Amino acid sequence: MKINRDETAPFTTADGSTIREFLNPRNSLLKNQSLAEATLLSGQATTPHYHPVAEEIYFITQGEGVMKLEDESFRVRVGDAIAIPNGLVHQIMNDSKEKLVFLCQCSPAYTHEDTILVNL
Image 1 (tube, rainbow, N blue to C red):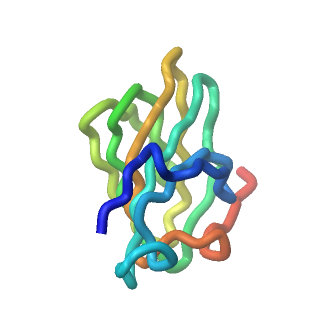
Image 2: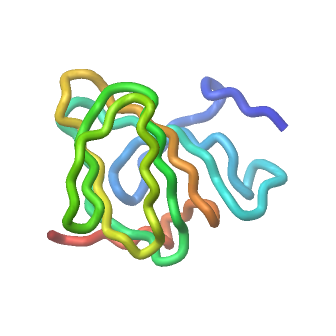
């Protein structure tokens, strides 16, 4: 199965990022994971959140920003991969002038119901 990025409609997730979900159990033969591309414009950030069930991998493909995992913050840039275990509060922020684009792989697949927003 093949899906092209440009044939995928963007939508806003529960954490506030705009994503294009390429593959997931609803549109492919996959049963246990999803792959999406997320975009944050300059100055945007996701709402701090965690996933009780899913673990994630972010892979930065364009731009740079700041990643927060619980109490740790660090810069991310093109080529960086970030492991996000389930249950860990996280947030990614675009503090640059260009857009921040990253791939997001979730296992099991992303659902709004598995996204718990946190007020810090």
